[in-house]
Image (tube, rainbow, N blue to C red):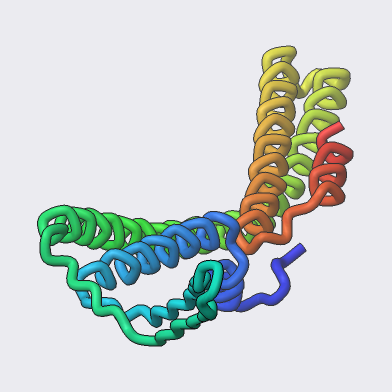
Length: 210
């Protein structure tokens, strides 16, 4: 049966959204982007809120009067990464390189998924046509064999004619089995490309091959 939807580019679009291979590459690119942002932040000063609280209890001795004092302070603390510049730059450059590599891997994954989807779609379409053609050829080969056997009985065909007809029938049947296998395999690849391949699909193929 023809793939549904019939538009090949719709299958490609679905694969770009749902392909497990592409999802993994996208996750890697997002992680690399976060690492760049994290290491870029190490170049900039940071400001922290600082709060202090202390309490002192002083005794006045035998005759004196004791005193209590409480100190509270709130302020900000500026941190400058002066002595870590080399290490920070090194980490930032490494993160940038990882981001570039992850971005390239993502683009390669997009192209690969699109190519695999188109190939699988065309494999299904061409497989249908090939199976139908070979089914017709199998019918013709079977008729030829029957005619050759009948002709041999009445003396208008030789034993070699019958053997040739048998060989043609076996060859056509083999080609048909191979075409059916390729068609089923293309179906699996197409569903795998768009992330919809399930156990039911595998069971269906196994039943068809039995």
